[in-house]
Structure formats: C-alpha cells, structure tokens
Amino acid sequence: MTTPIHNCITDVAGIQVGHYTDLQHAKGCTVILCPEGAVGGVDVRGTAPGTRETDLLRPGQLVERVHAVLLTGGSAYGLDAAGGVMRYLEERGIGFRMGEIVVPIVPAAVIFDLSLGSARVRPGPEQGYLACLAATSGPIAEGTVGAGTGATVAKTLGRERAVKGGLGTASIHLGDGLMVGAIAVVNAAGDIVEPETGRIIAGPRREDGKGFYNSIELSLQPGFVRPDRRQAAQPQEAGRTNTTLGLVATNAALSKEQVNKMAERGQDGMALAVRPSHTMGDGDTVFSLATGAWTGLVDRNQLQRISNAAATVMARAIIRGVTQATGLAGMPAVRELGT
Image 1: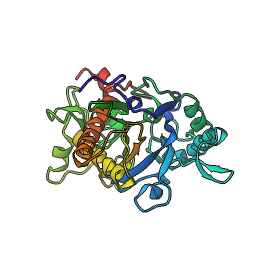
Image 2 (image 1 turned 90 degrees about the vertical axis):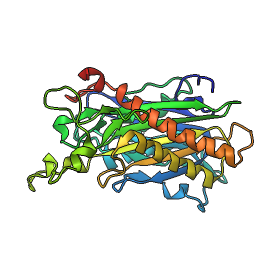
Image 3 (image 1 turned 90 degrees about the horizontal axis):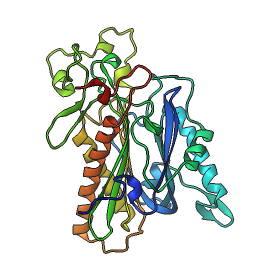
C-alpha cells in the first residue's frame, strides 16, 4: 500500500469535510459533504441513539444517494444543525430532485456533550451552515474540533476520572487508486485501546495520576457499582452521556446492500478501539458512503478488502480523536497527562 495523501477521509474522491467549533461553550458540529451524491448506509448498535434520516439508508428504501452527513454535539438539540446543511445544499441545487424541487438528503447523528461547557448553547442551523462553508477536500483538523469539541471518554468511574475525547480521521490506499477513509467522534463511556497491543490509551484516571484503570476489569469485579449509581438520588450521568459516531467512505462503486455491510464493519473497528462499546448508555452509530469515483471491478474479494479496511481505519480514527485532543473546560487530554 502507498501512503495516503493526507491520511484522512478526504483522501476519498468526492468527500469534503467542514467543522464548526465553539471552544467557549465546548460545542461544535462536523459535516461530511458529497456534492455529487454517494450511496449511503448506516449501522446503529448503541441503545441510546440520537439520529435523523437513518431509515432511508437501509436496503429497500427509495432514496439511494445522500448529499451530506452531519455529526454534531448538543444531544438531540444538535439535530437542528442539519437544517443549515440542507439550506447550504439547496442554494447550490444539490439534492434529490422531483421536477423543479430539490430536497438535500442529510442524515445526522448526535453525541451528548451538554455536561461539558454550556448546556444552553447547542449547534443549530447557522452552525451547520458555517460548517459547510468551511468544508475542504484537503487536510482537516483533528482533536478538540467540530463535533469532537465537547467529547469525553473513559467515564466508568465518573466524570471526575474521565479524559477528553475528540474527532479523528484516517485513510488507507488499497492500490490502483482504491481508497477507504474514516472519521470518528469519540465520546465513549469505555476505554480507548490500541488494537494491536491491547494498551489502554485513555481510561479512568488513577488516583495518583499515573496510568489508567481498565474499565472492563472494573465492571467485572463482584459488587462493582459506578460512583454515579451509589445513591439513587444522584443523576446517572456516566451511563447516559456516551456515544461514538463514525463514518467510513470509499471511492468504489458499491450497492446499497454493500455499503451497509461496510458500515457494519466500521462498527467492528469501533469495538476494537473502544472497550466496552455499544453499551446500554451509548448511541454508537456508523454511517457509510460510496462515491463511485473509482471505476474498478468490485468483486467478492475486493469487497472483503474494502470491508477489512473500513474496520481498520475506523479504529485508527478513534485513536487519533483521543491522542490529538487538547483539554477543555477542566477536562484533561491524554497528551497533557504524561501517562
């Protein structure tokens, strides 16, 4: 494999990415634009998702192509930002056409980040529009930006031991111009783990500040009760404020069934890098896009390679989201802990 141009999802022809970032209030949103349209898919495995337009991405539905995907903070309020993305696309005549009518197709998903920074300031239509104006097909910022601005991870021992999450991206060149890329917004309850070694990159911080606990090992201890659940009167924040969002994309020409399979494999990559993932308090969602700019043959073997790459780049994007983050609103980042 040769080295991707930017090692980010924009290495996939037809994909642009833009951020809106509000560091003062620890909120933001990120838009993935595909102005020429792309076959879209989705896989939702968390049991507490906040989404929009996901049903139409499943096989058997009328609409085949989408024009943007929005990943955003602000919990369910943040879904309003999709209206600004639609306005941006409509002004440019981009969307599903019915005669003279143009309806942009913009699926979206949210993370819960209201407990970091301000809970009263959330991305809305104006912020979604500004993210579109900032979109580029070149290198994109990672870490505490866009939808990753208010993200946190490793909340098994409560927010007091958590670590800053963020947004990351990665790509793989499979040869002959075939590309697969991913982007992830990492706001997980679980630990962030290096798949190849099992090393915990970010977990609940130990009392002495040296290293991390293992969340799965903690949860398996007899009688373990999370700090937020020891008193029934306290809010169960650590169990309800988590979601990792992702999107995997390829320039291959895939069917709707195939692109949904690619989203499934993106979730496999999430499970490699986030442990545990897909919990009762997560809304883990992975979108997928196939732009069709690469005209090579996609047979069964090639589809397997693309699927394997989707899992790999998703795991890499998740790790970059945490390692590239900077601390915000009192939440320290890995790079600042010196562990």
